[in-house]
Length: 392
Ligand code: HEM
Image (cartoon, rainbow, N blue to C red):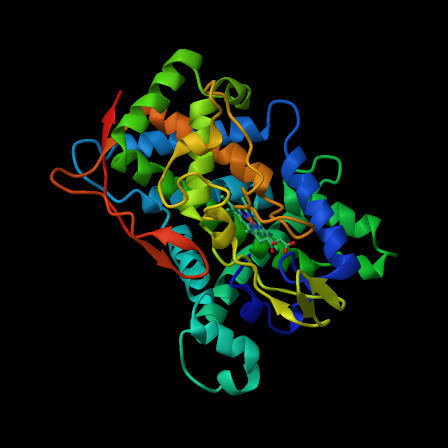
């Protein structure tokens, strides 16, 4: 998801989020396969996230002894994960240029949920002459696209098809391979837009989910304790968490699923269009109708969840305390267009969350009751909050 409809402008048939048909399918398959198979041998996705988790802990340690807002550091860590997959580079948490870019990206995702964006999509010609925040989305997008295009140009200079380093390198190879398959649209403009979609889609959502996770730990310290007990039992304090640990950590897994459910990061999903006349329940939906599927209604359905409005990890645990899947868990949507980054998001959330709770106990600033109020743009994010860290 990106800042997207507006900023893609006339090229809405490009990128991952708003393209359709054959080209979308090929681009989507390629992206999913890259996200799953990134890094062979030592350089696995897991190693790379563990390494970023280590840097994040170091950055949190520096804040020991006073309260701070974890947003910038978490956002940077998450952006570094997707940045390494896409263009093979991470940035220090105090890199001013990268921080500016991340701020602009977050601003665009927020503004994408505004009425200005809706109006621009409906009346682009008129709105392009009227001042308003929709112009910010476009100018921010141009900065991000220029930053990413520069990465593509640099990659072209030292590209070795035998040693793909990241998504750009693999995409360059795929472009060669598919040069006679014009319909698949593997070209440099499309590469840049796919990168924007992966970068923005992969950063805001995961950052805000991790922020919700920490906020719930501040709000419910007894749950934080239970997660830490499980970490101590299964992993201990001296080695890094791995994905293999997840199967033995039903409570932590349930907490993270409940964060996804209750955090409800993309409440109105992405709007889609009916590609043919369809009947849905009692309703006839003509071809071309814009469909907005309300994920909140499913994630808070009182017929599906025992305590839909509470933060209750037990939703994902059976009577024996083992993890249980739920049919109404649609945080990543469903069907052909469901989130292609789900696998990556799950690995990131599990590893970064457990590394943080293995290393620190989190608490709210003295005499402050954590607020669970949210700010809703395109995504639903916690309001800015501060916390204190106590090394374990
Ligand atoms: C907690 C984290 C995440 C959540 C809750 C989330 C949720 C979603 C949702 C609800 C959609 C809309 C699906 C639809 O239209 O039916 C979506 C689409 C998308 N997401 Fe995610 N996402 C997350 C992480 C990621 C990550 C890590 C990436 C990239 C690496 C990513 C990339 C995308 C892209 C490119 C799309 C558009 C797919 C398409 O139109 O075919 N997301 N995501």
